[in-house]
Image 1 (cartoon, rainbow, N blue to C red):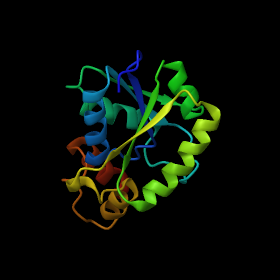
Image 2: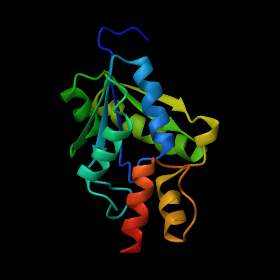
Image 3: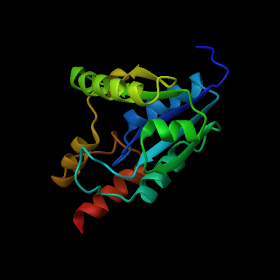
Image 4: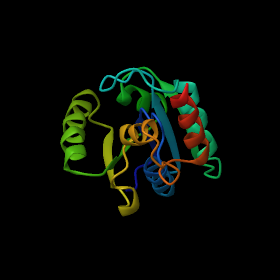
Length: 165
């Protein structure tokens, strides 16, 4: 991929961010000059988020502090508009399973109708993260399961504290 513009957006709800998300973000940062992690502040597919957009952004900023070409920002508009605002020509998404592909295919088609100049780039989940879902992490934490290897330490502590309230 050699476009003039090598900025990408990695958008999601990240509620909470998982090690799988961070793996995709790190791999995207090696492919692009700059990656903007967009924190969706209007999760249509999900009910109310457990963490605010600001909390989710802070978790990711802390986790990617060593990646000098990654920035993090909440957004409330269409992902293609968010990408345009940042001069991005690509939206990077991670794929874990066929169910992810089906959803992302639909989203890709809708995004292409809105912005045919912005490409969707899909990274297959690394095998050690292919089963991790934010909702699964929250469910495990709710019932006292171990989440320490699934999310950054700061997220694990915050999630455990939030659930016990």
